[in-house]
Length: 131
Image (cartoon, rainbow, N blue to C red; front, side, top):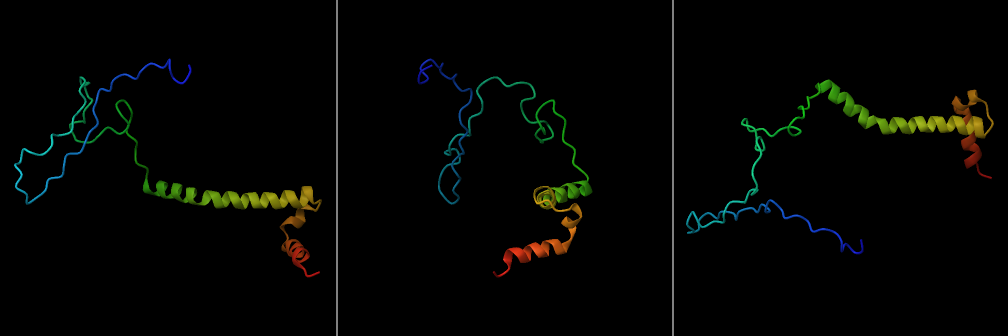
């Protein structure tokens, strides 16, 4: 296929675009029947059940799909809290794992010293001490 030359043409559309009718201006002397026609609907045959149900509610996920149940408010709150805190918790876990691996495996220090505050204060003093 070169530049789409062999591509078949698209089939004709079954519908025309829906256009909004002109707004009705109050206080003018127009006759009631002079406004634009109503929007056009699909011209093809309609399928059984293609319209809205009789109760006025659209189907949730289309025909044949079950409706989605609403969760209990406490469960929704718990999921919202988990979504809100998952990134900071993962960052803290990565920091702790990085401290441990960096001090024990790469630096050669003991695993017990990783969790002592004095170790990190000593490192801070070494890095930022005036020379």
